[in-house]
Image: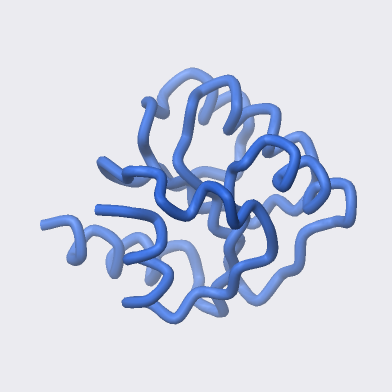
Length: 110
């Protein structure tokens, strides 16, 4: 499944990183702890978090994640948006909580 398909099916907001909307998604990883994501996420996953700073892009780039979804209606920092556009990793937004969004993405990926 492509990032763009998930955006369309779940009505996610696109903050930045439009050049990565065709990235393939193989699954998801939900965590707000950067070290946990570094240690346990795998390439091609979409990352669900409430973190909004540019360090999430460093982690996503290091792990070759497909996209980042920020939950609870939170908005990424300007530095985060700039880094997302530079890296080509989409930063998306949802008003859902992490638990709800994780379930929705799981159902889409079944």
